Image 1 (cartoon, rainbow, N blue to C red):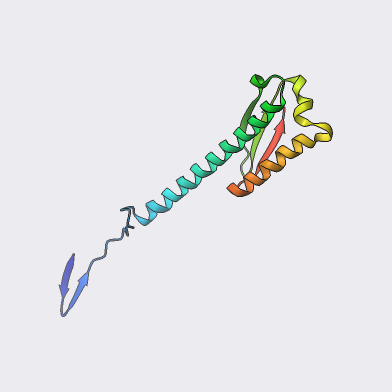
Image 2: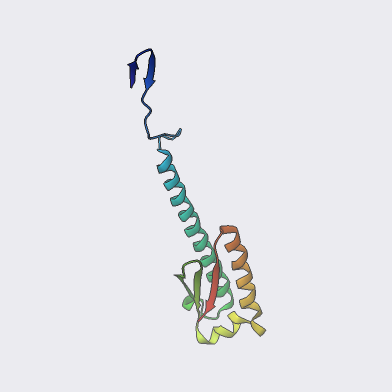
Length: 121
């Protein structure tokens, strides 16, 4: 809207600045935050699927393998549950298999910008 005061023309500026998508700048920041949460959720789902895949490949009873997740604030805890007779296979000699799974998780977590811990129940 344009108003004339004396010899100067004053344009009233709309406080809501919009980008090319038609979103307000504030709305776009919120949309980015939601996208970041979606990316983090999909990254955690991928990590979870990776652990399930590895554990089922090692286990004698793959149908019993399950992974649950728990949000611990700054860290995500993945709880791997396997049959009692498969725990030794999943943990491995001197914990080498479990440590390898944790290393793979660490790489995926760094890529996703989060922290993840694996607990074997």
